[in-house]
Amino acid sequence: MIAFFLWLTRLCGVLLALGCLLPATALAAPDHYIRNYLKVSEPISLALDHQGNTRLFSATDLEIGKQLFERNCLNCHVAGGTLSNPSVSLSLADLQGAKPPRDTINALVAYMRQPMEYDGSEENLWCRQVPESWLAQAEVENLAGFVLRAAQEAPGWGVKRFTNEPAL
Image (cartoon, rainbow, N blue to C red; front, top):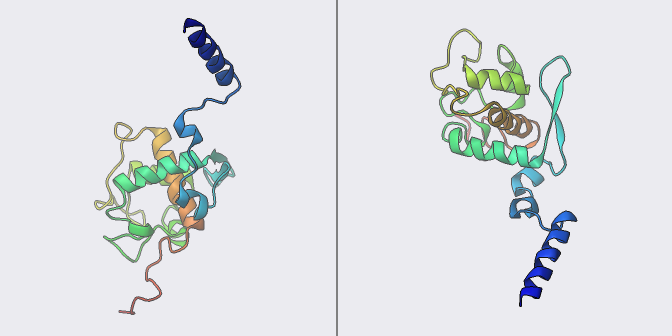
């Protein structure tokens, strides 16, 4: 019996060394939404700023960002819309049109850390400020990465009116 456990221990050590025993999260398939709608299965490059700096985001990074969005932003930003101000969504066009533009990771992080009105004139009291004590820099960057990639790729993200909705 002891010989069996020694053999099993050695086998597990060999398999672990070969990378065959991975944590369950490493074996999990990427999130369906991330893979099919954001079109991410391999790391993608997203703009950090308007100077051409970029950062790679993995499917896991964006999945973490999606989870953070669902826990903290979804109540006001269903499908990238903005319930408190429906004329300003999280669409790429609206992110680009903000003053200053919010179409990069750093710009979205700056907005989340200190929310300003769409025209940049004053603080936005509708959107919660996200201090570092609430979300660490890596977390808020993953959240920004999810929002930016959704604005770039997700069908229906940030639309102001659905196609079957009557005009007001």
